Image (cartoon, rainbow, N blue to C red; front, side):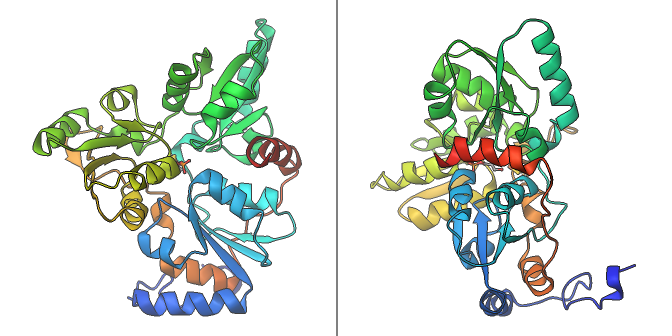
Length: 334
Ligand code: 13P
Ligand code: SF4
């Protein structure tokens, strides 16, 4: 049963095909009519990145969110990103095209479990600071001391986390392990992982390298160690973009991150060829094109248009946003 007995909007729930170009025109008109700005992560479909006012990585989008001048933000990304935009802009309406767009990392670390683990560690005498990857709920952020993204994690751990404290790093074990390696700091790691980066197949990556002998491997630090160990460059999405743009001579890059990242890479460095690294299905062991994030894929042009039209789904302010905002602002904006 539809809420409020509203009639379906064309395309929404009806399965009617709509021309992407018509949808883009409609979204452009609605942005003006509704006084809205669209922010899109590099992992959403290229056509959504193209109609966005800002496309970027998690760090840049959080920073862009505080510079928005319209009364409404549409966040084409996942729930924790829209929550971050809302906590930094309490007075603005923040819309997420599909409220079900979650994140396997965020889901692996519920606030009550984290609070219990922090208490357990402290009871055992550990003098901890909790450093959280931005891929966590606002409730989790409110329990933490520092928030990092793939773009600033090394800098925060090296320069801002007091040296005499133990670090509890949540929720990405792979990013945490990588940070231990590059910073030399010991960390207690939460056992979470990204469902997209976890499944890259080392065997297929090595085969792809054999088929493309001069290729270079670029990997996101959310990948497991076996993938990072054979990579020529490790960095978050924005760092990847800057890295390929700085190389003038045409190259072939094997890209170990979400497949939509090929879109901004091709846009900034068209001289190169980019090949997505395939993944393996954990149940059958077969190779698959499963390096797409099902949560990011919930963002469609129709849903962006529909949320603009209806003014929902909206991220609503929660009491713990105040504390989370303080930690996020200190970590990402200062
Ligand atoms: P970055 O945008 O920091 O590279 O993060 C990638 C990611 O997994 C976002 O969910
Ligand atoms: Fe979460 Fe991974 Fe999807 Fe990013 S790509 S939103 S980390 S599940």
